[in-house]
Image 1 (cartoon, rainbow, N blue to C red):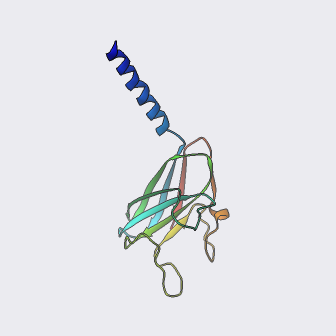
Image 2: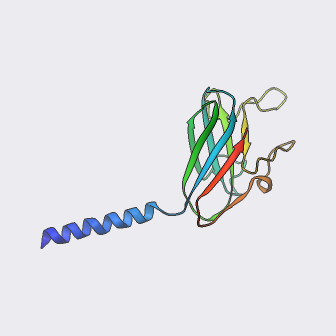
Image 3: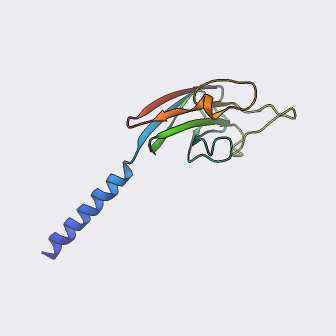
Length: 139
């Protein structure tokens, strides 16, 4: 009887852990127009509160690969978000700038709108509901 109780307890605990792992949806991002294999690609999922203010609420990275790179954000809960992507060629974990303030490394945003000046949350935002999403961001 103790063995059966122990087994049922483990099964119940496993089911709870699995159910908690599947909160939210998957957001898959394909970065197009990667110009080189140098360094890595980092992407950050941001709320309006974190946008352009530091690390995202979720962050992922992959090795750079000329052509396309796909990154995935798991367990994203419903809400309004924006994604910022950086091709960190020298792997120093930050965007590098020329003396005139222009970025030295390629970057992109959800929404793919290229504005003069810094990007805005309004131009990059998208909605996460109950279904998985696939987005393309072009450098």
